Amino acid sequence: RVTLDLARTNADRLVQLSVCGEITSPKMRHPHSVDGEGHSFVLPKYGGIAYNVRLGMPALGWVGDHVEPGVSIKNHGDSGDNGALIQLSCIGNAARVLSGDAKGERGIVTGCHAGVDHCLVHFEPDVLERLAIGDRIQLVSCGQGLQITDPPIEDLTVMNCDPELFSRLAALVDSSLELPVTATFEPGWMGSGLGFVPAEGADFDVCTTDPGVRRFLADDVGLRLGDLVCVQDHWCAFGFTYYKGAVTVGVIIHCDSLYAGHGPGVRVIATSQRPDALRVVHDADANLLRFL
Image (cartoon, rainbow, N blue to C red; front, side, top):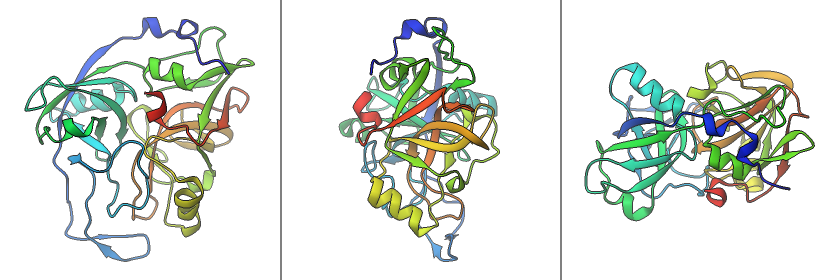
C-alpha cells in the first residue's frame, strides 16, 4: 500500500485562504433536555474549551451531550462570515491564535459541527490552559475541491480534508481510492444531518439510542474522537442521503448524544456511488492522531 502522491491530484491549484473565528461560550438553551427514552437531563454540551476531552479519546461514555473536543470557534460576523469558516475549513488545516495569553500558538482543525455551526480545533494541553473564551483563531483553509487527476476516478468526491493529511490517509489501489477505517456503520444507524445540504458545511450522526449500537461502538470498536469510519449505502456528494451501494468515509468529530436520532458526528472526507471507486480497509489504528 503506497500512500497518495499529491502530484496525482490538483492540490497545487487549490486556494489557501484565511478564515477566522472566536472561541465560543458553551450554550445551554433550555433548563432541561429530554433524552431518547424520555428522561430529563442537564449536562455539559457543545462550545467553549474542553480541557479533558480531546482527539484520540473515547467518543462515548462522557457525562455530557454532543461534547466537542478541544476548542470550539465561530465567526460572529454575518452568516456569510461563519459560512466561510465552516464550509472552507478542512480537517488538518493549520490554526494560529491571534489574541490573548496564547497568542502565536499553533493548532489543527479536527472538524466542523452542524446545527451549532462550530469549527473544532485541537491544541496541546498547555495551550488550552492559556486560551480564553473570545480569543481569535485564524485558519489557513485549504482542501475543498481536491480531486484525483492521475488517473481520474469517476464518481468520487473528496471534501473537508487538508491535501497533505489526505495524502497520508489515502492510497491508489487498482484505479480506486483506498482509505483505512476503524468501523463500518450500517445505513439504518444514521440520523441527524440526513437531508442537510451541503455536506461541506455539516456532519451527520450515527444514532446511539439503540443499546446494541451503543455497545458495538463503545465496547466492540472502542470508537474514538478522530477515528475514520465507513458509512454503508450513503452518498454525500450533494448532501447526506441514503443511496444503495454507495460508500462514504468520514471522521468522528464530536462525542455521543442522549437525544433521539443523534450520536457521535461524522464529517465526510470521501464519498462515491460506486464501491469500486472508494474502497476501505479495516485498521483499528485509523485515527487522526496517527496521521497528523
